Image 1 (cartoon, each protein chain N blue to C red):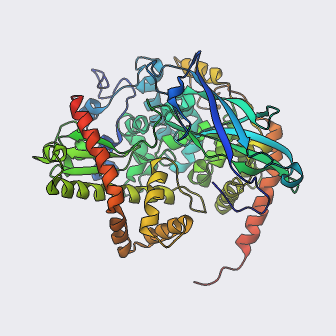
Image 2: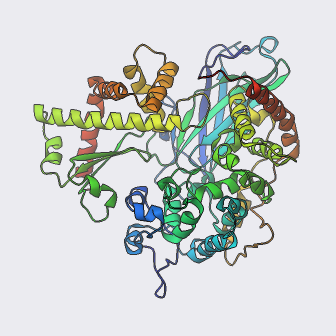
Image 3: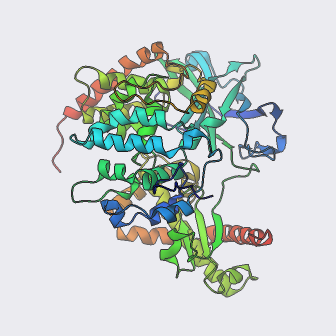
Length: 317
Length: 292
């Protein structure tokens, strides 16, 4: 995240590496740490019955990027764990290791975290007599307590169910619909109505004009619903200055805003979308539907959805 | 597994977990007006139980009793005045980890099944209806979650006194509670020191200060300016495990988990800075506002 601030910040990238993860008294296999997408998957075959995960981290800057005479004194590096859902923040001072990196161990307590935890580090210095100014930040890592594999972005969950089923009262009012998108939770859920004759078979079938048309309809519905829900989350963030929220809300906004307002910068596009939403602008809905129908987005999403469907039916669920 | 009901009453024996979708489906206008309660049998069938459901801390009777006693005790007062009394006691009765408290299904079950009467008493305007989000909604809106989280985020280790200060001010509950900056405990305590001073702060001042603290947090790391002590997570675990038979005092403040107090030096370091923010915000507030 680059911000415009009235003091010098560190040039070049500030990188955070997760060197090792210990869960209680054993070491997490390296395959569960994805350094490219910056994800740690903590849900292993050993189960969820652990107390503490300790992450050894190292933060580096480009050689010579940090100059005391330019960036201020009292330079320090702090790693921060943050999870919105559990309102938990933990900050740990890292220590210079003598070779230009800061290292340290961050402890993640299992009673204070439940899902996806952000891990980032900030470089600070005393600038113009103000202590604790942020002069550089790393890209955040996701430490995911529920993930079994360290892959990017949990996508839409797909559930096949009879909408009239007794234990699904929330779907009863949609019982005549072929599908329903629920953007309330995390991850969002796409329900396919098993009682809607032929739908599931159709989506399983080989490519055909009919399948592609139905799939495209589902896709537009999914993306426009997710977009409006994500925008609602941004509006509720409670800050004066609108910011892209975390989690899937942020992912959806970052992917769709450039299509909704192609001529605006990301920040302006978000502000404009929030303004139109507040004003109840009728044309806005059309813009969202248009952006949601972009083939570039539809195809991968539906490919993924259909693969997920296959996997689900193969495993007998 | 359905929540077990006792034979003699319609009350469930244990606190359960009620999924959002099911909760929303049962928030009919009759429920929101307080004319009906959600159908017990259906709610029980669609609820699940926490993994350690037999533990005493999941017994439903103590929390139900506390919520009903609240409506009795504050019968002749405005319901908002009950928040500062109830928040620390609700936190003492419900011994939860933050991970558990993050699950909306828990709060849905408490509101729809254990004590819907309390939600209606606190949030239903005369002749009107409760907003559905007070039964099932975000942590800073849902009727019980907001009080539990206020107690959790505003307590100073075992000391609930700052929680009373926080919950005496509806603007703190409505605005400050959901600000990210207060998750660093010294920020929360410094804010509350200003709120609790003689004369206190007006709602508008609370909102302006909260916004200024959040905005400054984008270029300042409060964790460096005013470090917190390391949380004693073992003390929290022990406190949660010792729920059985715990007595909730009504006329004195209970004691919370002793997971370490906020360092006073850190709070002291922030208070003058926050006063500065407030002075700046007030100057801006007095500037003439152009007519629309």
